[in-house]
Amino acid sequence: MKSVYIHIPFCDNICSYCDFSKIFTNHNITDNYLNLLEKEINENYKHEKVNTIYIGGGTPSSLKLNELEHLFKIVKKFNITKNLEFTIECNPENTSIDKIKLFKKYGVNRVSIGVQSFNDNILKLLERKHNKTNVFNLINNLKNNGISNINIDLIFGIKDQTLKDIENDLNYFCELDIPHLSYYSLILEENTKLYINKYIEEEDDIIASQYDFICKKLKEFNYIHYEISNFAKKDFYSIHNLTYWNNNEYYGFGLSSHGYINGYRYENTKSITKYLKGKFLINKYKLSKKEAMENELILGLRKLNGIDKLNFKKKFKKDIEEIFNISDLINTKQLNEKYGRIYINEENFFISNEILVNLLLNERSVEDDRSI
Ligand SMILES: C[S@@+](CC[C@H](N)C(=O)[O-])C[C@H]1O[C@@H](n2cnc3c(N)ncnc32)[C@H](O)[C@@H]1O
Ligand code: SF4
Image 1 (cartoon, rainbow, N blue to C red):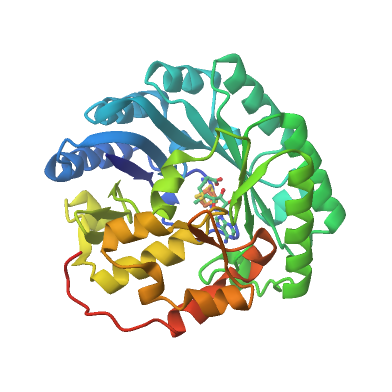
Image 2 (cartoon, rainbow, N blue to C red):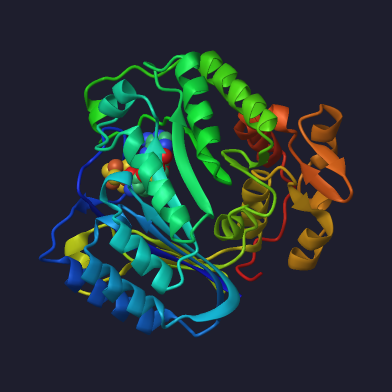
């Protein structure tokens, strides 16, 4: 069983904080891009069963109706399971009812919306082109057309944002009555307008207290904090993203995509010129057993329920304790163990990077062959 990520790099507008792979929407090249995407899929996809498809960006909803239809016809190639999770990322300002009807026609059953904030001043700072009315309308339109498995992305840790702003955002989220929220802390990335304009980062202890507030509030609203940045109602976890955190294999197609197939990690070019010439791949390497085990740890400990010890043993033919110094970290309460699972307590999620560093620094040596 495999997952599939497809990258649509076009954006109608470039936001001040974003360093993802994107270019301005240019309808002279979109169909050409989709033709090359189809070529890449034909050359690489081995017809395995697929249980999740995620079309991300960039802004997939910046495609016109006929371009979206072109994309969905390509997606039909995948040998899908009966209960496929099929997600598309949308922006509030360019997702019309006609586009939603097309999503429905081609089996999209989950939509992820980039909202970032409900506050006009913050939206202006982030250079977003929508307002909260657009978000409310889009969610109504999705629900009215039978798509209720909806995520929104929000951002906290912005210097201009107060705790009251965050509380307001959470109240608006609650009002929307949707099952999933991805809540990211702002990362000030080089090559973004915010960074170039020397925007000041929020202090760590303030970000930590905002995170704490968000976690508590969402718990009151009955959302499960199932991954460091993700909250969901029961049965609405993102199955696609769980593929990544469970260190399972997936295809990545499109500009700058990454994939993990048959023990190999690979990375596509970030250059649209090269991509349109059919030069898709820039890097591909077989993971050593050591790298694969480290990935299992780094990704798995992002989840509230962490890593299943038996599953680790089944995958790597080694006990996790043979490789990583788990017991020391359990003794110092950085890690927990219950029902055969190793995990980080929710209260320690905010310092999970430090915990991982402690684990990896004390890693025991393992023969580093290139086969898993
Ligand atoms: C690559 S964007 C694509 C989604 C869509 N185009 C949009 O604008 O919402 C995915 C999500 O990553 C998050 N993101 C992007 N840049 C970020 C940054 N510098 N810091 C924190 N979150 C960021 C945003 O919440 C965004 O919705
Ligand atoms: S946040 Fe979304 S819309 Fe804004 S530039 Fe990045 S990918 Fe494009």
